[in-house]
Length: 294
Image 1: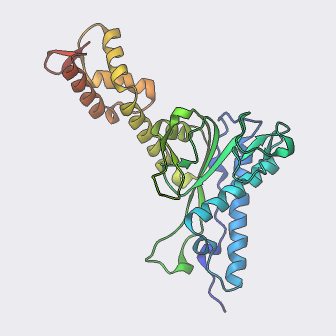
Image 2: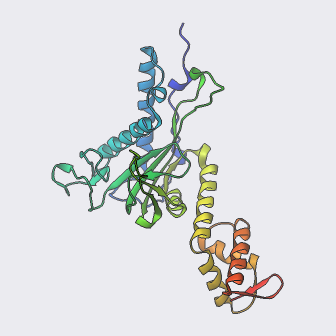
Image 3: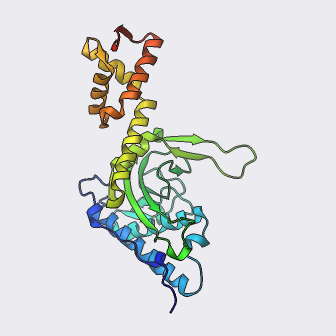
């Protein structure tokens, strides 16, 4: 009797991970994301079962990382195209975005669309999601997990599963841009900034309950880093000016916590270092030890 490979089992899709209070574009429903995840898990189960029966390795081994992510992405686009009444698949090769508003473009094909739509990204990464260019608009990021534990026999590895589906509206400024290096074949790459990652994490439509704690931690990290690299100095000065009296660093951290929805104790170190920079620059002062004023 042949050994049954663990990775051919169908990954579960727990409906308890559905977020029913999120705002979605183009009449998409949270249930559409749940159905899409179910269909993707079904497909991975069916394809890998067939490949094992034919004597092949699992698809995750036959495709390179980019190829497998592309397969997941195209599958998501196909499912959402079938589930949505307002979106249709962009049939232009490598066209942007992946899903177009129905009826807007001739033959549902455009190379660089400017009339809305939904771009889909599938990634095994926890962050640092990439795009071909920094663009504003609606994005769907499907984060998945592949069991690549080299200490396990291949047949004993867990099935590939979706961890989170995030659909959010990003601005062009939410991306950084790295131009292609001279003499390199690879084109330039846009990478998501922490502010963009925070937007996507905060607008998750479905998160595997077993990944929820990690998802929330990643959201807090993204918000904290986005604040530190963005508005930290301006916010600290504004809080000091509004207070009109010297404040302690932990009091300022409490005020920032209410603004960006991150626990104050996670912000205290960054707040303290920011205040020291402001004092050094002459924008703030320390009238007495442990207290700051603008």
